[in-house]
Image (cartoon, rainbow, N blue to C red; front, side, top):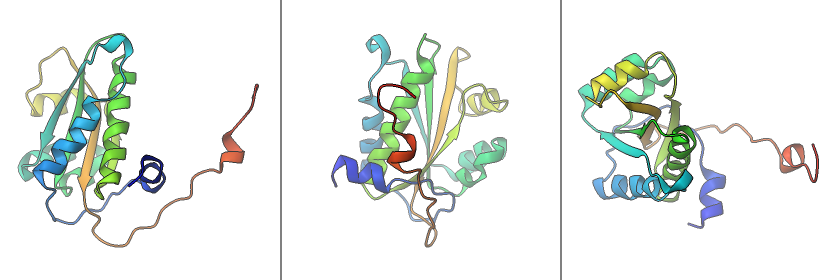
Length: 164
């Protein structure tokens, strides 16, 4: 698939089948995150892949807007050291992974992590060091059934030339 086509087809999936995602595909997705742009080339990220159902369900129970993580076969936690641009760097990595997943035919959904009340509990669940920040939780898998997509705002609605 072409990059722009993957970006255009990507959407959030919140209902997953139990069909597993091949480990090689997960590694390709995470590798896309590793290759993201980063401020000052600091690369502050670490990625924790959670496939064990018990751990996914524990994480999902902590994240009220991400209960579906417990049903997705894969959850990738995007973690960063506390650098100046950790949110931007971690977000760029997350976006790369979502687009790579779309390119590979894997569905996904981003759940916020940074500064959320559940961040500390999620980090404790995966035994992350105290100085690490949770930027995002990414669910990956295959849709449980047919999906409806919300339309994006048109280019004409959001594009401004020279000034707002």
